[in-house]
Image 1 (cartoon, rainbow, N blue to C red):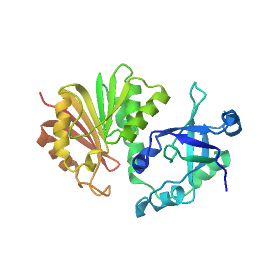
Image 2 (cartoon, rainbow, N blue to C red):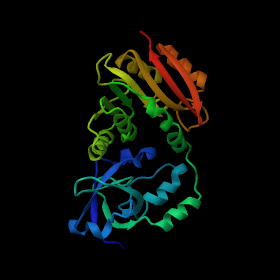
Image 3 (cartoon, rainbow, N blue to C red):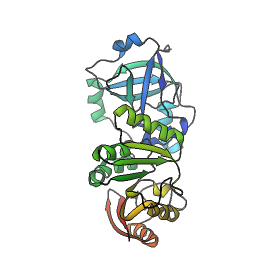
Amino acid sequence: MFGEIGSVKSKADETALQILSLFRDSISEICLNEPESISDYFKPEYSHYIIVHTPLNFRFPERREELNMRFCRDVGVSVVERIVTETDQIYVRGLMAINGSKVYAILPFMKIDAEKAKIATFPEDHMVRVRSKVLPSVLPDIKGETILDIGSGFGSLTIELARNNPDSKVYGIDLHDSLTGQSQMNADVLGVSNVKFKTGSAYSLPFEAGSMDVATCFLMLHHLEDIKFALFEIKRVLKNGGLLIAVEPLAEQHHHGPQLSEAGWQELFEDVGFAIEVESQEGAAIMKAVKRE
């Protein structure tokens, strides 16, 4: 059995890490029991590592059984990317472990691992494909002095918006303190200073009326019980002529929430008073909605 060589420091708890699509963007600090041994585990030639750590103390749904096999048995095993900073701390991205977890082993991800990864077979996650193919085509066109990302998760897309708009004020909002706390930690580690994360609800946004140039919702609205109520609230905080950009899965492309077609999403936005254009990519609807003056 491995001996403990360190621990994990982050803001993420098990509630946050159950949101599978987000954990891979979470940044954690690795605190070694013997800090002087950093060079024994981390080498400048390697960008990625395999970390053996305390398992998660919950079970994913049956359709995610592979995650139970990987993270919820005797130990958890994560493949992570090292984040290089100007400090002496060791930060990694993608560690599937909560704050305070023990670290038992740190191994370099090697060329032979990368070669095997190219030919490996495994079940494909449709929503991961949507995130990887659709969102990168949307983000570069989002511009504004004040930008609000609703349902920001661990903040990776919010932080990218802030990087794309360095002179803007960018805000991310989500329901859980662990998500917004982890998001702020991610931004601080990455040196992105023009973004701030707040805990709050899409039904009661903690911003003044007419304060935002742009609002974004990425794969969030279909999780809500009352989408129309949230759209009215988003409309409230937008300036006249402000833009809401949303990306949501189309009917039969996801497992929960309303099964809406392009026409269904368009009707929903128009009922709230938006002028909207809708297009589809990879089974997702991309909506660009303007608040009418």
